[in-house]
Amino acid sequence: MVANYKEEVAMYDAEFVSAPALILRSLARDPDRPAVTTADGATITAGELVDATYRLAQELLARGVTRGSTVSLLTGNTPEALSARYAAGLAGARLVNLYDGMSALVLAEIVTSVDTAVLLVDAERYATAPELLALVDVPTVLTLGPGPEAVGGDPVGGDAIGEDVIAAAARRPAEPPAVRVGPDDDLGIRHTGGTTGIPKGILSLHGPYRRVFDVPFGPQGDKRRLLAATSLAHLAGVLADLTLYHGGSVFLQRSFDPGEVLAAVERERITDLWVLPPLLYRLLDHPAITRTDLSSLERILYGGCVASPTRVREAIKVFGPILASGYGMSEAQNIAALGPHEHDRVGHGGRLSVGRPLPGVEVAIRSGDGAELPAGELGEIHVRSRTLMAGYWKRPDLTAEVLRDGWLNTGDIGHLDQDGFLYLADRLTDKIIVVGGHVYPSELEDLLLTHPAVAECVVLGLRDAQQAEHVHAVVVPAPGHRPELDEIRAFVTARQGRIYAPEALHLVPEIPLTPVGKPDRKRLRDTLPG
Image (cartoon, rainbow, N blue to C red; front, side, top):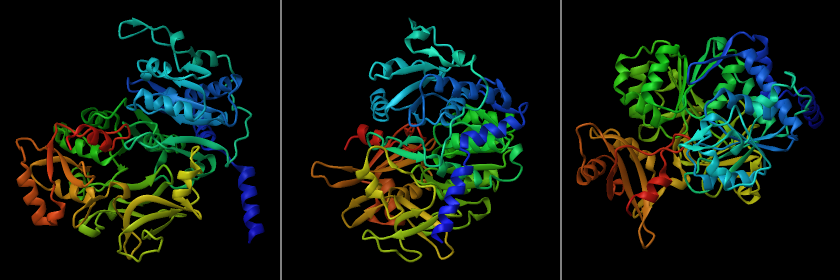
């Protein structure tokens, strides 16, 4: 058996084609098809994207980028960003995305920690580049297109950021680079959302990401029209990769605006949309939802944080049975999936399932001492699969804490039912310890969202001077309402118990989100009174 396994690995290594190479090959087979439509409405054909990417890969190699080099992207949702990430992968470089919304100080720490050899900047980030560049010393900084002539009224020539690498690449051959990329080579370093301090770097390899492309993507892949309204640096980028590989088209938006998303769905006959739960709620609450033609939508994927069953049921009524939930994380990629016709699965407290583990993924629920728990019991979610991360960048101590014997401790709390469906309760680190027990914020958030005066909410645990935790509710009031603390406490006490009742209520016009689109708990903790 060992010999057979070794033979299988050797065959896989010999025949290995990286995900970027797969995508480019697929695009090259139909060069005239529309591949990417920009936020300004310009269309790039598959052939144009292939040629630009191969030329850029050749230019990066000519500038000394090689296997093991780090290429960092300061980019937005642009075709140039897609081309750059594929080109870096073809050249064998390690890719790092510098997320919009993070402070220049945090980005500078990331750029330095990952040993950036080349920094690529596109037009969406020209305005913020100088602040970052003042804090770092990167060997090579290049722009993905002509540099800005002015920013904020002050002259900032292209040379103030870097040379136009796309113009330089125009003289290179539009051919795949002669670089052998293997499954154990570094693909990139993804960073956590930064909601709890300096982000951790999650090192991924080419092999595990390549396996994502072996999973069925759905019927009529060549007819898929994906709207990428969230950052390409996150899951929207993965879905863009899969859509292009399977013959579909990608439509880019600069950022998530619910009105613009609804307009694009109708105008571009979008079939596929990815949203985090808070963004799904904003779509549902937008006044244009009732007058928008949504008939083209075939699949709305949601995930990234715990979803409210109340609001998901509302979404199914509005959009139809086309919602599909995905549970995954950067450390493990995709873990479980819930199909459109499986949304009747409910667990503790009416919580929706996040689906069954995907083929090749093992899930175990364990107690704090590592003992595996039976179906129905709440515990820590552990995962084993061939798509796990290689580890945390330069942090073997953190890696050892979460990766043991091939199993990843996700840090999430949940349970499995008798049929193997997985349910999430919360993040282990978000649990609030109070007198008499503990509170999982997502459970209380689900309850608060059923109150007629609550449109959106986040529940936090804030510590007092004696380090005791107290439950705080941050609420966006529903139109025409202004809830009071006593009203909310009575509502929660009657339905879930006294220990869940918030001790403080904060009314806000909107919930701040991280660059990923999740509620920014760190920002709220830093700004709310204790």
